Image (tube, rainbow, N blue to C red; front, side, top):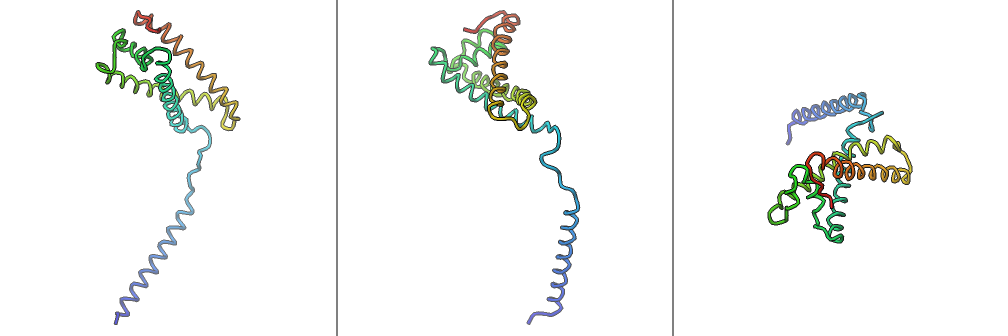
Length: 173
């Protein structure tokens, strides 16, 4: 037969614990919860979202170039070789899968990281121009204009103008 004092002690302890739970719940309900989404500008959101969208855009761009280059009679990673002429000069054009596979892989990683980094200001501009509740068509038009602007700067500003002045070679074919 169980000891009555032991049962009474356990019941008292249980009642005390229930009281403590009620007290903790009361204290938690009194504390203000953080507002989500935060009011005003939330920089981390724009940085993370822009980085993710930029890296996805870079992946799609790289895939389109890898698929499209052989159609145009070029090597699949010709674009990466051209961009690698910045740090490596003309010898980047000689890279192939056999002797420069690791370098080409690192070039692809740099391409994706560049897309990630450039995605942040582009996404910020898109949100700044369109706002947070713009129609899909408006966002697509503004994003297309920003993408064309990025291409013009990359191709004409950097590869066609800046690279020959810095490194003395014009490797775009």
